[in-house]
Image 1 (cartoon, rainbow, N blue to C red):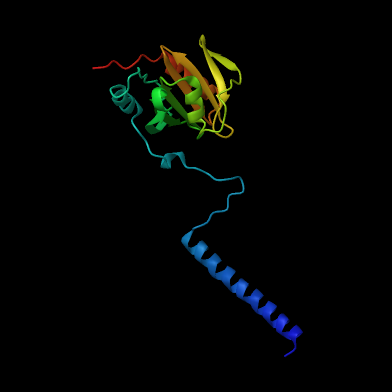
Image 2: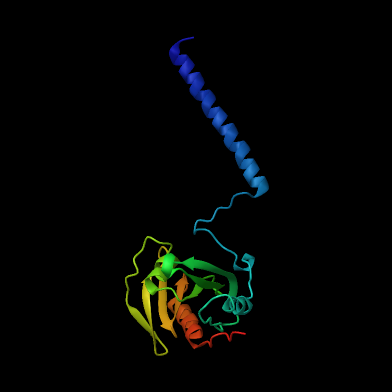
Length: 194
């Protein structure tokens, strides 16, 4: 068989093999519903996210940290879906941040962090590192000045200090949602310690 004929046969065989593989893989994906076409990007069902009892978790955390913790009262249709404490800083500046997150009705996410860490350390930690703690302006919320900073990715962070504790809000929420959480956080009374 001539070299040119072998190439034609090999190329034809390869194309047939590829078509057969695509049909088999496509059938498996279609039967198992393992793939979804979404031209507008991924979708998240807010109802599938976990739920936590934010007031209970924050009250419990208030007994474990050395700074006052506030329990903000957020709108009833916001759902708290995360709570954790994370270390901030090292050495003599080592402390903790108490964080709770909410999903708002349109599916936005907001997280409130409370810490006695210096503002610059808290801002960099919440942004995932790799950003500076430089201010990007400020906003007044019911007479309290909140300073804007770069958050993670395209998100924004707002931070203020109330009674020696930094309150930092970050997430994908709208400015109105940021203002709602800022108002709730700054006006909440600290949890009384036993």
